Length: 234
Image 1 (cartoon, rainbow, N blue to C red):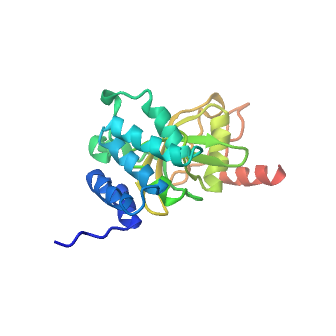
Image 2 (cartoon, rainbow, N blue to C red):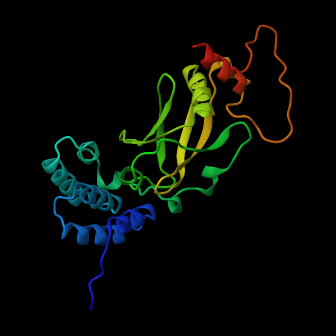
């Protein structure tokens, strides 16, 4: 019987499809060709982690650190595995998530396609349904995993808008809706509103336009036009 010939793309495809047994088999085969392939080792460690094989995952990431002591993916996963317990592990797959997670609500939710996405090696460790974190900068909003691995950034128009809302106390839940080789799509949900924006939805609603009536002493709501003007003045 002919032994299958695998490529790194096969391993990446298996990870993106969340086929973790296949990912382990393919990456293990690739390691036989080069035992010091850091990308293969990182993918293998993550696949073991997804299947709850904590000890094996940790040993695999430690091999990466021996080869590259500054490898951030391996360092952060070893740190995470130092405190994680078997019962704490949850596979971040949609099969274990409520279908209501992606229920859209006008003004409160938005589907966003990220820009400046991370290399495929980082994206292959992300899964649909996984909760991610928004990290605001002066003029940008980064998307990172719970252990601070960069995945991408919000488009400028959405980023400028959310920076204003977040700085004034709004909070959001952000989950991965889909992930591909060069793409990352998020589902952003407004959870709470800060005092300044109590009556202002986070996102423009589609459909019939309802004029905004400003109450006495109330500040003007944030609009897309306001965002552009403010940033041009800075």
